[in-house]
Length: 306
Length: 306
Image (cartoon, each protein chain N blue to C red):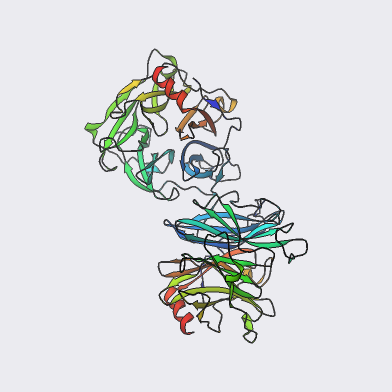
């Protein structure tokens, strides 16, 4: 089971005439809502600070983008950039998980990057254009690749997040407080499995099926090649892995995935299901945006038995 | 009573780097919905065909526009352009009244422009981005400057439209059929009144108040100078004028209103009320977009007694 690239790829490019999306557009979120595909994408321009832009599409392939970004750094906690959006439609509002990359570190621990740090942030919107930051899932540690589940489970909001090198789960009653004692690891890299031997992290919003939550994820190996995999999580307790195939479902192959700003990267923050097709949007080499698809049935079958 | 120009004027300019909004942006619709100002504006580019673009704003002053238009000509009936949008929020959908300017004339009568004609069209949308044309209010005559009222009156959908030189009313039970026998004139130009002596037409969506419908309109005189006026229509029968002040409320004065693609024009398709302030968005000289405001109370007082 491998994802199929769309022939129109890459579907979104940087704009050399822009100041803020001059060099790279990548790692988009895409939600299908009210008959339209809504994309939020990370972009880097002349100052190399990441901002989040918005584009809209009727077919998910051809995009109409806003001239200016919709989310930008607003204080020292995200002054170096807002990155890797993952938007979840939840109880009739929109929640964007994104990574705040700061100049000064707002947390209590030790910054993981020299002179700065990252925080797994959540923002809320009622219109997909204006966003209000709610706060981070956790502070003071290297933590990102977080995404909200599309409904509460047993009354709690649930988020995936990533404590290197593993994928973790967090629970909250209000989306503001994510108690440390309720966080637990779901799965980690597989040292003897090649492609996912070093580090793993979640992709887009998990897909609910009768058999469980379909969870797509990324991983890299010793050579730092990013590939995508899939697994099936328990519906009522998504910290339990039902099945995790050994094979990956997607790897860099096109030149614009092999070469770009960061080589050998396919990285996805979105896998919306529209008309039975899983649409995997991804950044290619941290430089352009691509689309690869598969049938939901086939992916579920592979995730269950592959 | 005169409208006050916003100091940030003009608030939207043509984009010389664009193919479709190269030369002129003007005559915008603006609705305030879900916490945002949504603008649909007429634009002319390299081919001088009018298309309709979209921009969004949190404050109604600074706009973020989509790179590509959202409504374009789609057949011979509008091949020369789609013009002068007026969007009404009605029963939880969006309806855009716009003028179709055609190459061949679809109606039964005689085209009013040599080699072509205009039709007062209505389109519907659930998302403000994708629009489905429903059909014209009337065919075979010079008719435009139409706009839907924001609610049914006595069970009927109501639209203003313009049979030169007067403003007319139309009624419909389904938004598709607008029976000729139910169309009636509301008011016309005043030959001895200078500024509105030659022709009149409606502006944006009429504003409902306890005293009646506040209706802003445009007019021109012998010298072809476009000015704006206001009157008050009966709540239950808006074909009845309660009061119509003799004085105008706005006239071209800034250089970008006096000179442009068509000189001496202020032309408005939008007057949304936000926080008690009437926001009159208008095209200046068919070239740029401006904003002028007044307090709703003051405008209503003037319309009732001025």
